[in-house]
Amino acid sequence: MNTTRSKTDTESGISVSLTELLALSALARGNNLAEVRRSAAARTGQHASRWRGRGVDFRESRIYQAGDDIRHMDWRVTARSGRPHTKLFEEEREHGLLIMMDFNPGMRFGTRARFKSVQAARAASLLAWMATHAGDRVGVLGFGGGINEEVKPAGGRRGVLQVLRALRDWDRDAGNLRESLGEALQRARRLLRPGTRLIVISDGYSADADAWPILARCAGRHELGCVLVSDPLEQGPPPAGRYAVSTRDGRRMLDFGNRQQREDWTKPFAAVRDRVRSEFVRVGARVVDLATDADLRKAIMPFTDRAQVPRDSSA
Image (cartoon, rainbow, N blue to C red; front, side, top):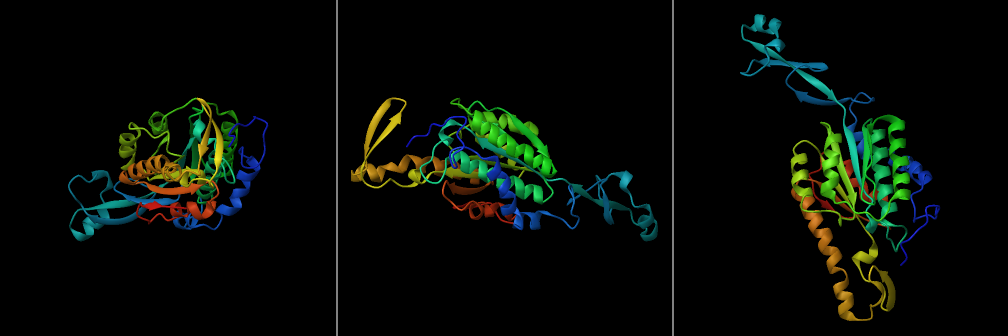
């Protein structure tokens, strides 16, 4: 199970391919995200939200209530009815998507179909295309592997292309430096604007105790999501046999013919996933599991239903 690669390696499944990310645009079309999140007007920024105060379109008048802005008094209705009325407006809010991509060293691993890092980039790309087709702005923040850059949310095809190029370039440049999710969230907060959805794509090993209070504060103002990426080898042991693996401490043999070894193999991986999943669900985030060999579109579908109550879903 060799996880090393050269910067010129373009073998499918080992490094991120811009061509593949571009092709995912077709997979994103016609999905529920575009249909649910798009309003009647088919242009950027046309998401209506009700609020009190000056907006884009007049909605209705109602009886004046203490605290209403006097500047929004509806004097005609007031004069006609003899009772003070104030105007309510509909504000057209532009939704956005900020993706946080984990490039920590553990993401560069895979035994089926592709590396976790490649599947993560594919998931980020599909989500970005979905948001763009819905008329939303999209941006990405990379963390781990020495990547501490971001692409600020922007709209249209140009915005999504900036995200895809960043995913390819960051995948190529990522090294062995580590960064926690908590540290990355501190950077992400300044990119979040009202109406922005935040989705973290990671295998969960970067999640630390500092991340959860930050996410809890974000939960009151933003929709939160998490894509938990894993490899099938983390979900179940390989066929019985002896396997040579390389670690930081040198080369060692794993005997999967041993029953106890097989039973204990998945426990530490499951513990990490369960802990991270439960913390995200606790702050109101939607969580999906995404294996490296999973059907990408099927796995991402829980993010397409805006009316869905946050829950835990598996690919």
